[in-house]
Length: 282
Image (cartoon, rainbow, N blue to C red; front, side, top):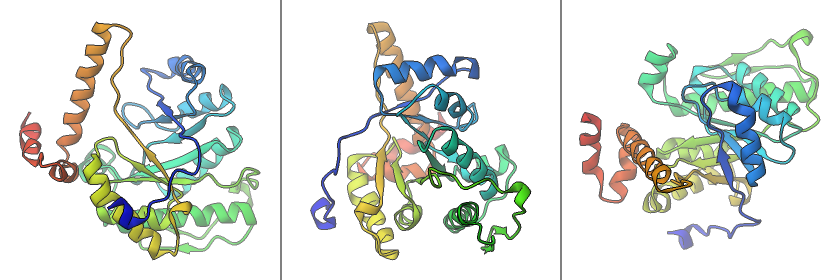
């Protein structure tokens, strides 16, 4: 499959990022300095028990070269303008080292946890990216803001609310996905695509790459126009006890992903689909 898709060889050295995990904001600086001093090329945040953007205010001030990215922020819990403001500020603060990573989250989380409307997720995400880029263009060029999509409409941007042009340019947009339609959207529109950590080799080769290729063809782009990040779950420990604790946490995380219906297709690709329902019951 890889040969049929004519995937290019890596064009540069492999960059390895570390997860910026913390229990409270008071501990962010220590974690940032730890990842920086280990030598990670970048740091990324999860949107779990904490906001995905706020720790980068601290990280930007205590790093010089590391790339900072949300992998991924819950897009539909916000709107294009709030996301554009947050990303623009972090791009400025980090001197051009921020990547705006977005994902949909599951419908029940959007409706019941965030109390936000659902809809056609792929259409909404395409609309959101179009709106963010229109807003960014207005800020960079001074052109009138006139964006009207199916879900988002932005037609007013007074000088008082307009940031000055960002000297580092608009931050790139990263999209996380597993389903074919959203993956195609990433290939068509995003600067980056993140392979979620629940993916398997077979699933990526047989489903992810072909869908990305379709998206690239849709907008007359090639692999050189899309950067790819791959999240991996790795268990490590300073001793046997801490290692086994990390293994247990990793197993729990794998099972948690496996309870989500859309992730079942990754299990199916390896012939493990029967695990999905027992995990959901547990």
